[in-house]
Structures are given as C-alpha cells and as structure tokens.
Length: 601
Ligand SMILES: Cc1cc2nc3c(=O)[nH]c(=O)nc-3n(C[C@H](O)[C@H](O)[C@H](O)COP(=O)(O)OP(=O)(O)OC[C@H]3O[C@@H](n4cnc5c(N)ncnc54)[C@H](O)[C@@H]3O)c2cc1C
Image 1 (spheres, rainbow, N blue to C red):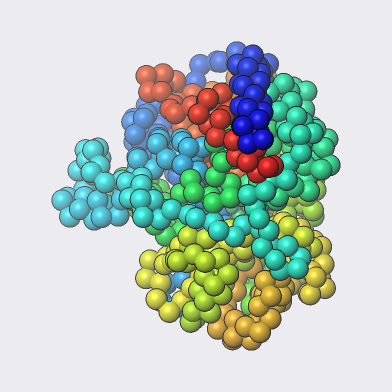
Image 2: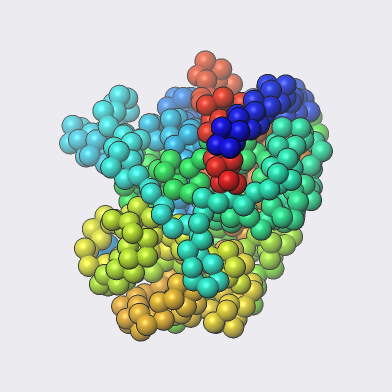
C-alpha cells in the first residue's frame, strides 16, 4: 500500500515535470507584446549644471537618488527630492516606539529570502550601515571625502544577513477557526480540481488572456475555501476580486515559498522595523552626499512641451505649505515622478478615536491626482482611474499596539509554543468578518525600545464588514474596540481588561493599499520611461515592469534603477538579478509539489 502511494506520488511529479519542460517560456513570450521597441528621441544629457527633480521621498524616490549618484555619477548636490509629507519613507515610515512612546506605522514588511532579490542584492548593498556612516563622518566631514569613500565595509544588507542568521521565523500556529481552535495549516485542502486549475493558470495562461480578469474568474470557487488560500492571502494581501495577472505573477515568483508557507521559514526581517533599518540610514547617506530634501511640497501638475513628437516636461507646478511655486525644468534637467501611492489618503485613529466615520471614496493626496492630470495630457501614461475607482476593493486597516508589561508575550508564547516573541509572526482568522490577521514582530522592534514594552501589529482585509463582537466597520472602530474584537477571536476575554489598561493603539485606515492589485489591462500602467520621453521617468509600484510583482520593496527599487539607467542611457551596468523563475527550477518545483501532495494525504 505504502509502496503504491510512493509510486503514485513520483508518477504525478514526473508528469508535472514533463509538462513543466514542455511549457517553458510560454508565459514570457508575452514580453514583446507588452513592450514593442520604444521610439526613443534623444534623451536630455547630463551637464555639470543638470538638475534632477524626484517627486516622492518613498523608497522609490530615495533609491532613484542612490542609483543616480552611484551608477550615473550625477552630482548629488543637484538632486532635489520633493514630497508632500513632512516625513521621508512613504509607506515605510514609522514613528515612536522608543522609550515607551506609542509606535505608529502604515505597514510592516517581510522579505522573502529568494523573491526579494533586487532589493536585497542591488539596493541594500549600496547603503553603508549606521556604524560605517559614523566612521565615515569621523574620517572627514566634507562631501568630497564622503563621495570618494566608495567601498563600504558594512552595509545595511550585511546587517540584515547577520540578523537572519539568528532570527528565523518558525510559525507553529498559522490559522485559527471561528471556534478558536488551531487549524492544521499543513493540510492545504487543495483538491485535484484545484491543482489542475492552478497548473493551467500558471503554465498555460498567457497574461494577454487574463487582462482585466479577477482571480475568481480563473480559479474555481473551492480554491478560495482552502487553508492554502487563507495563508496565501494573509501573506500577500490578495483578495479573490483582485487581478488575475498580479496573482499569476506572484504565484510564479513565490513558487519556492509553497513549501515554507506554514512556517514562513524563508521570510527575512531586518533588525528593527523597515523605517529604522532602511530609511534612516539611506536618508542619512543621501544627506551626507548633499542631496536636497524639499518636504511639505505637493507637485500638483506639470507642463509638457507642446508637441506630440516627444514627452518633455518643462515645468513642475507645486504647492509648498499651501503656497503656489513653479519649478522650471530646463533643457538638461530630469524629472523622476512617483505616480500613485498605496498609502495615499491614509487616515489615522488612536486608542479612543476611530480613523474615519465614513469610507473614503476618492483620492485627495497628490500621488494619484498628479498622475490623473498627466495621463489626461499625454497618451501612453496609463489609466490611474483603474486603481482608485473602488476603495472598498483596495482598503484595509493596519494597527499597532504598544503594550507595557508582558501580557502579549505570555499569551502568544503559550498559544504557539514558540520560545521567542517574533519567531511566530503571522496568524490568520479566515472566518472572522473583518478577516483578522495578527502579526508578532521580533522585539525590540525599534531602537531604544524599553524592555518592558512589546509592540505587536494586526491588520484586517475586510475592514468594511461589521465585526463579530464590535458591530461596526473596522475603519469606524477605535483602538480599544479593535483590541476587544481580537481578544474575543483568540478567546482572551479574561485578559482583555489587562490588555486595554496597558496598551496604546495607532490605527491606520488605508483606502488604496492594495489598489495596485485591482484588475487591469496591459496598458493601464505606464512604462518606467514612456515612449518618446526626453526627460521624464516614472517610478514606483504603478509602473509596468514585465514579470515583476508589485507590493514589494524590490519593485520600487528596481523601477528606480531602470528609470535611471534608461533615461541616462546606462548600458554597462546590468540591472541584476532578474526576476526569479522558480516554477522551472527542478529543485523548487519538486519541493512545491511535494508540499502540496503531503498536504493532501
Ligand atoms: C501594509 C503594508 C505592508 C507591506 N508589506 C510588504 C512586505 O511584506 N514586503 C514588501 O516587500 N513590501 C511590502 N510593502 C510594500 C512596500 O512598503 C512598498 O512597496 C514601498 O514602500 C513603496 O515605495 P514607493 O516609494 O514606491 O511608494 P510610497 O511609499 O507610496 O511613496 C510615494 C511617496 O511619494 C509622495 N508623492 C507622490 N506623489 C506626490 C506628489 N504629487 N507630490 C508630492 N509628493 C508625492 C508620497 O507622499 C509618498 O511619500 C507593504 C506596504 C504596506 C503599506
């Protein structure tokens, strides 16, 4: 009996391997369809006086400045980064957490050991770590000296790699059902029908055929009831109404994660949260080089040279602290513009105040509005309305809780059997009306966090539904009400008074956070350097880069490097590494299939 089971398993794997080999290359033949050779007029040329205006001090904007300095040798003192916010980092921003202060952030991040390759290998390695920057400053404080200091001994990539050696996730509890029972997440629950549909979707469905389609239009209803989907959705924030194109790209890129879905063992965290680990040292490095940050300034519109032969920006119209200000763009100046933002129009609540009382239904921040204006003026600049038309399909709520005392540690470690806070990471409640997700980061989460505080986080993807215990949408709930809903879902009613007494909450309502996942066609996102551009590049998650997956820091850094290389005609430095194709890697293919087969035994 055992022998025949073994044989059947190997036989299925063999058939699938044959299919795999037969279909190699099937999907990416599409690349040419998306990108016919662009017509390139002469790009502007870098002169000693060239100025560079980067709109957005999020990761994409910061990375653009780094690549311009390091790859294009652009004079850092002529680089201006403009942002309408008072803070740098965009979606990566955080504040508080140190010395007992309340922690606050619009999001936390996981990096997959394999899939986040561009960010890991081509961005983090460019930034000296804080100790190295201290040493550089002691050596000589002049910008010339810092500029000549090109070989960093220790980078923020080294910090993360070192941290990963001792901080591996080991999720022992991943799913909890409506009766507060732990679900055996190793049972993916996928049927033969589900597997066949997924195989067809991944290996035989070119992107051209799934334009504007939702995931639930290409995968069967049962697939969305499985534990596999509950975990997948929790980690990647997909909903069944999201774009089939994006889901396909994710499934292909994260193929290797199938076998680690239950433990999250290959997911990396930096020491501290993303802001402290990545943004703070990057901003410090850029400032030391002389880069100019222009904060509190919104770019509201641009002028193009009046011709259809080229796309040349001649003016940025800004509002600086409410006052109109125009920035002329001269012949050899350059513009790199962040279009759209997943943290556009976020609203923030506290322990006793809900983020909003009515749902947001249109963007008011600059990111989408500027893109709308530009797209209305020139062809081939995408279709921003596709991403802002339905906030009820792109919203979620993220909260962070700063707690004095060790109540969370006691409850979480008891429940999971893990030894350290952070080892556990993400727990999903698939049946809860808000679709609660509970996330336990490694502690300390920020520098100078006092040992008697614990910071934990949670999010809800169906935040417009009424809760089970708190009968209102999550975006209309206070921090205290959110803690009440969560504690009931875990069965921690008894501990609730202690939790509430010792906790402070920050609650972010994010209406456009998954807007990049909304169904789209192949032309809804503009190219990084649009056809016929002379001095304009787009950066960030609403640009189109074939095969690549949005909602990832790698996408923002790669768009930045591509923008710099294409606009400055840099061809001697490769943009590596390319997107991984593990669905054709026999090792990962075997491990993935094996995990699926074991989970259905
Ligand atoms: C909840 C959440 C969870 C996440 N989880 C992960 C994860 O696990 N792994 C991962 O890899 N990534 C994750 N991400 C994604 C990652 O944070 C983003 O991909 C990345 O930070 C985006 O950077 P960006 O610069 O492209 O955009 P943004 O961070 O959105 O920055 C854009 C900036 O441009 C400014 N701006 C735009 N237009 C204008 C204008 N007209 N005038 C002035 N300023 C303007 C905005 O104010 C903003 O500061 C997550 C994000 C969130 C929100």
